[in-house]
Image (cartoon, rainbow, N blue to C red; front, top):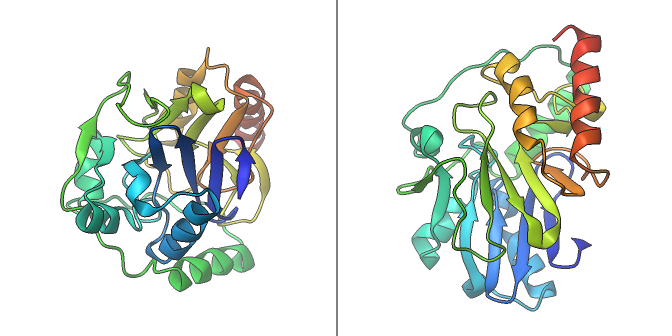
Length: 241
């Protein structure tokens, strides 16, 4: 679906992937689940594009529900995949962590796990090769995405600021839909390695004037960065996090 000129989303509020459509090609932000690949092809077609127009995939972090079809694009089409150097091993399947799940609701958790399984989440293909990046890097890709380090959810969690589409893509640095409780609205994301560090990292977004704040899970936010950071801090304080 088109969110705004040159800005598209596939998937849904459970697992989302974003596309930047620029004159020099398409940049894909995160790669969701392997089974979302047909949705990628369909969305490219509605944009008047094809897989040959994809110039790169930029990952917000290396978790399995964000790398889904990335290796397929890299292996079959030569598309480079960029990830923060601290999450490169995670994206290659060489290391993982087991953060606390925290509070769950059976129905919401079952819906998330069912959707993930139906979309290939149980058959993750890890990356054989990645292009490591660091905070502050501006990538030579359509939209000139800039990497903003956001450690906490994982060591290499990042946000990706793309002024050309007035958006910052935040992966699991925050969420607007808690996949384990079904609760809607801005809040800290689950499965976070270091919740305190993730909360502090929200202020790495200070000064970014983007209207769109786009998480990997949840409803797209179009009220700007300061408002969503304030809302998440209120949510964390109310829950004692």
